[in-house]
Length: 263
Image 1 (cartoon, rainbow, N blue to C red):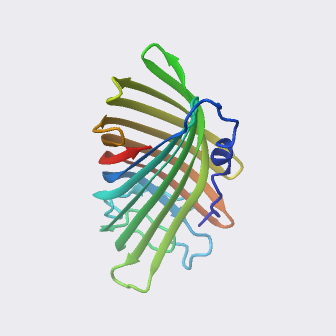
Image 2 (image 1 turned 180 degrees about the horizontal axis):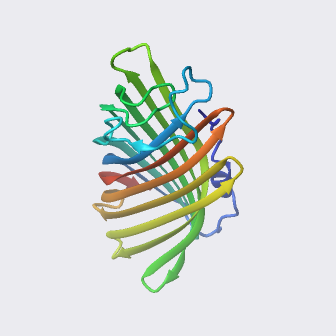
Image 3 (image 1 turned 90 degrees about the vertical axis):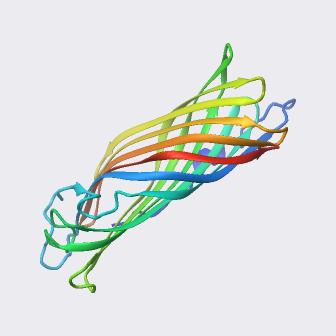
């Protein structure tokens, strides 16, 4: 089942707000590897599957033991921030991909309970936030809003009959509220923590999203810096489209390290 992706219109359009005339725009770019791991449960019902292997509503099963994709993998991470004084627009992204082997604990789409499977699991996360900094002593507290586009794909192949392939897709832009705190020491050391949250129940869709990110960066020169951070994303979603139904509760988390420049 797949929902058509939508653009990050809300976050990007906000960047066109009137800027302070006396402020010089500052752009910060980061890039590096992240060491991410996945955990959680996924259930999938395919209404038109031959034989009706899965039940409705689907029974969720552990992605490690059932699919063999509870691995830790190196994933590319990048972000760009545009600071225009009070508001700051940030876009960040990572792509997590892993493969493995497991044995289904329950029916999954057209595949029956007990089927040995080869699995490919992929998650693309693109997050855009727009926050407004409020100085509180040496710390800045910045409330705002954001949009997180998540695209999850799970592909299973029956090891006993490779012609039997089952896929489950879930993709959607998810708006959320966010609060960011930041501390800068002598223009060298910068500490940042950000928490985003959303919960919604609309028609055939239920979703809860938690996004946490922390980062420490050290300025090597006027332009270049190093960073060390941690990313934690949790999605709990149930969605029905036509005759298909997916129930996904998974988390992706891990440290990230790299460098960047500010200009």
